[in-house]
Structures are given as structure tokens and as C-alpha cells.
Image (cartoon, rainbow, N blue to C red; front, side, top):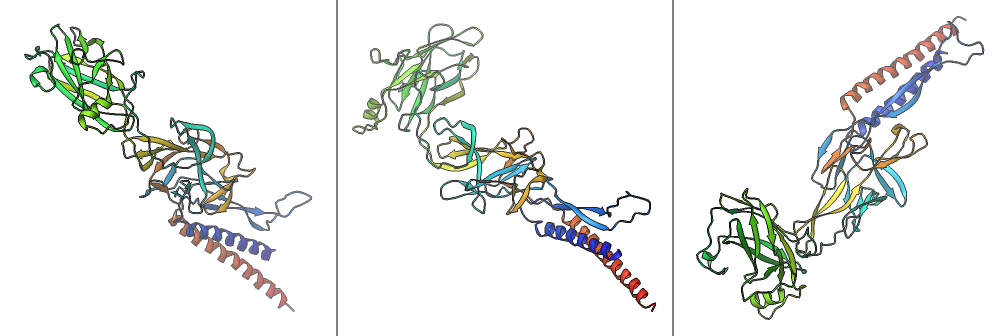
Length: 436
């Protein structure tokens, strides 16, 4: 019987050495998960049941279990590399076949799909091409659209959230200018000026200048505008016109606490054709005209301090080309454009399993779902049992090389000891033969 016991021990030690050798070989494989060998003893079946004299007949390998513990995260220079910190797997497709991986080394193919080194595609949620909203209904192959962003005009006046936001502080110590009426070319006819950039429908930028003029009433101010050095009108009507050659101002009134109380006439109507005729005679730019937008002075104050600009910005932008991408911890992929804008390009999804050890390893850093693993539970990163993502980083193998080398020594000793038991049994048998 010792021959059988020793042989089973040799087989078990050999399998354990195979597992350890595989761990060592993949110690530098990104996303690799180490495995451990589970042994069990073997007893002969007995009709009468077990007893105090029962002797085992050796050892066997019950299971080889992968250890899905977290590997170290290492930074890389590739913005499309992604590491998972926590539970979950990347969901990959290859001609309709779905597999799962922890290897986040991705790049783009010629069609803009995010793929791994074996051309399997990373899946996630797409986006609405108009609004950029994430479409969470169905996971699909992630394709990053390199198309440029079309320009967006400042305004229109019909959209209260669009236009120019001007949060200013008006100096309460100011007096009515000595030169009347207002003339943008005469600095003594106004108290303060500031400027920002607005855009027409073709994405062409124009300079919008605001001029603050102290009015006669207590807490009263008039704000005039100039676009590219000309004088558009301000009025509550989008069909505003000049009154006697003088621009119509926005009238602001502040209460005794310095808070903006009322605003009258804050819609600008810019005749782009007239402006271009003045700025560049004979070369209209073809943009939609008039350009109408609101100037929102909400948040403006009148305090006894110097004039200041707390916030002055306009909606709208010129066209822009894709210059790079960034991936957030929630898996949302944003495109960064040359005009300073950003837009959602997609969202990476992760999948997890009730029993990850039930997955079957396919090689190439891939696993496949089985009945033992349970059905894949898909969701966005940092939700449920799913981990968070880190861009420009990869998850290293979780192999502890020092521990594996110690295991190798232990398995070598086990192999030698089992071989010795066979040798000893052989010597005993030889002694019996020599009794003749």
C-alpha cells in the first residue's frame, strides 16, 4: 500500500509545483490572479464503515483555487490604461463572445473602439450624440468618436440660462460722471468698464465690453454695452433699437444693503452684419444675425469698495477638435477639446459574480462565466460590490513572489519525502524476497 500512497503524494506534490511555477511565471502579468492548491486525504471505501484501524491510501488535489485579491496599482503613461481597485471585471467582447478580465491595458483601433492586445473590445454605455447623456439601457462596445465639437452661439435671449453672467461690485462712493451723455470713447463719461468674449453661430469670437455709469438716483446705475467697438442696444425686446443715436442701457437699482433690487432692460441684440461692415468692410461672416442674449446681473452688489468683477462669463464657444480623453473613477470617459470644452464619450461598465472562483480561465487574462460562477451582475464602477477605476494605471499581478519561492521549497521537500517512502517500501519488499 505504501507504493500507492507514495505515488499519490508524488502526483499531488507535482501538481502543487505546477501551480506554484505558473504563479511565478505570471508574477509580471498585468491583472493575473495567483492560485493555490487544496489537498485532501484519500481513504478506501468500507462496507462496515470506518474504524480505529483504518489507514489512508494517499493524498489528492481537491481543487486549484484562484485568489481574487487586490493587486498593486502602478501608474503608466497611457491615458487609456485602467485599473480596478476593488471587486469586478472588465466586460470584453470578441465577435459576440463575452469574456471578463482584470487586465486594463487598452488602446484604440482604427475605428475608435477601445481594445486589448488581442483586439477584444471593452464594453460600456454609449452616449446621446446631441446631449452627451449616458445611455444606460444596454451595454455596447465602447467607441470613442473623434468628431469635432460644433460651435455654440452665446444666447439665445429666449433661454434664461444662456447668455452673459455678470456679477459685479459697483462702488457706492461713485458720483455721476462729469461728461454727459455716455460715450464709450470718452472715459470721463463712465465710472468703470470690463470685458468678456461672446460667440456667434459660426463660433467667431467677439469682444463684449460693459460700461457702468452712475445715475442720478440713489443706488441707481446704467450699464451700456459695446461689441467689437460698436454700440448694440439693450432692451427687454429682442428688436431693440438705438434711441436718438444713444444706446439703451440696462438700469440697475440697489437697496440700502447693497443688494441688487431691480433690473430693467437686460437683453442685448447685436446686428452682426452692421458690426462686420464697420470692423471689416465688405466681408460679412455669414453668422446668424441678430445675435440676441441676456445679460444676467444676479449676484451684483453695491458696496463701499472699489469696482470689481466677481464673475463675468458667457455661454458659447468656438468649434474644437478632440485633443485627449480622461476617465473618471466612475468610468465616465470624457473627451477634452481644443476649445476648452469637454464631452462624455461613454462609460465603462464592470461585472461581478457571486462566486468568482467558479469562472473558467481561458488564458490571455480572460475568464468566462459558468454555472458555478453564477450570472454576471453588471453595473457602473463604485456601485454595489464593484470597485472604482483609476486611469493611467494598471493592476499588477497579485503573486507574492517571496511566498511562492518558499512554497516551491516546501513542495520540493514533499516530493522528496514521498519518493523516500516509495524507496523505503522497495527496500522492505527486497528484504522479503531475500528471505528465501
